[in-house]
Amino acid sequence: MKCRISGLTPNVSVITATIRALKMHGGGPRVAPGIPLAPEYTKENLALLEKGVANLVHHIRTVKLSGMHPVVCINHFSTDIKEEIALVRRYAEAEGARVAVSKHWLKGGDGALELADAVIDACEEKTDFKFLYPLEMSLKDRVELIAKKVYGAGSVLWIPDAEAKLNKLEADPEKRDYFTMMVKTHLSLSHDPELKGVPEGWRLPVRDILVFTGAKFLCPVTGAISLMPGTGSDPSFRRIDVNTETGRITGLF
Image (tube, one colour):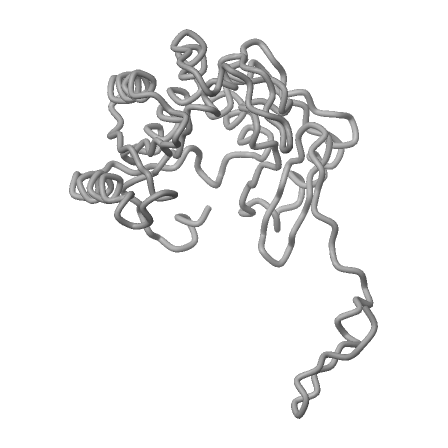
């Protein structure tokens, strides 16, 4: 969408991965704040990691669909083991991605020099950038294409209310050039955050379509994802003032 509006054609897409996240996608136990990490995440477990790498491979292939060059940034933490890093590197490079190990959390900018070099190297290579679909394609066909090509879904399930809205929007000539932005959890390729790895044979349920006329966005909403609440018609910030002499903020909170 940004490329369509700006006319820019990017060379590179950086995919950040961690050993812990890939192990979760391989079937590892859930990680939650305040709970000690399970041994699967603090000790070598190549079998679990190898199962989860399939998720990373899927994302690499998605980037390659656009013609951009994928660069995998392995965000290296103190619990990671060199054999595990090597396994991820091997699979990513086999898919044609450049791989960099980054320790910016520990060393700041110096820890990301390998990543910077990989991005620079990729930028110097010619790209064949292309969009996934033409703007002339109907909204329904766009969603089907995104669901199958990007997410790996088997099909799309339109909830009756969403399908009725879809038919109304597609019949409106003023909305035929609107951009499509999917609303979906980032925790899974599917609509279900609990489905890790690369799930197969699932259906993507669309339960609503949000319309943003000013921005020209049509946003199909999938699954039970929560949306950010909007500002009320009379928000409290209207009654907040700053005293320029004292620097104090006054008003109703």
